[in-house]
Image 1 (spheres, helix red, strand yellow):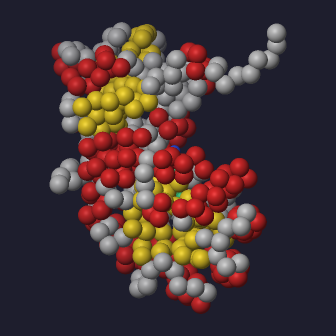
Image 2 (image 1 turned 30 degrees about the vertical axis):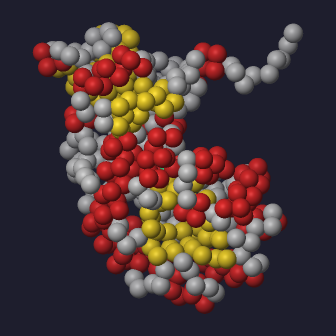
Length: 416
Ligand code: LLP
């Protein structure tokens, strides 16, 4: 079974195939290649061969992705009642499904506790309050405590969670909470922490520090209270978004993680999201307008921050490529690629060198498989895009394009 190359660049995608998909399904269009999802899962399983891997479904919850990941034999990590429902609907083995609470609303907990009791799903709580709230609902199943480890990492401060007070139980309060859980006759099976998202080689020290703190906590503190089944050190494995960036050395990360954890009679767990799907997806957009200005050439496309919010939200870089059949014959110019939303932030790329774009060209946006469709919105009353899944030569519509009518479909009658 192929594990594929460590990284798949935008230039590796077949331009003619992508142009065909844009013509058949129209744009903006997310394309997700499930064979690449399989390869990514295999590479993770090769490197973390002794560990327990869960897919953080928030990165991409479309059905082809969930079912593909499920078939590769890993579990699912879910951050809401909706994600939990999706993972179970997609057929993940409930025993390999984890729910991680983040200040959970009552409505979520009602659903989660019911489902967890029925299917033996592990519930990870993030505060003493959440423990009390699940206990009030009669939960006496498998429990995990999310620890605030005090070490954060990631591609942007907005996604560095490990030192943000919002997430998890402060390190020095975990022992008391663990004792409380055991007293309430819950089965405390795990500890959990997550440093942040988009960890690169530069963040490895922070990652090691977090893992080592978790090892200490499990050995020195929790061992007195109960025997743990697992210690999960979160997700966050980064992927290269720029051509020149090297991919993470997964074997080295796995080795560093094991060493940092130290001797422990519990399974080490990880829960990456982005790594499974980022380079398995591209976003296709069509050029609507080309405008010369004093500063730059503005290329207006039909995908914007409502389609892919990462550039506007985190200043994220996504590679751009012209799929025009004659792209190689055109002069290369410096452009700004902007979307159709009325915000200055609605720019997919600045100062990009592209073969002089023309109206109706199709552009591809790289690494769009993670947190792309998932974070799309209807702002400016823009219908969300379609998603098509490809597997070898097959192409299947996974999510249909929203129509104008979908934008108002939930509204109640307000006046006669
Ligand atoms: N586990 C927990 C508890 C998490 O909060 C997250 C991500 C993950 C696992 C998966 O992290 P990953 O392996 O995908 O980095 N929207 C942002 C990323 C936010 C991630 C939030 N939590 C982005 O587009 O970069």
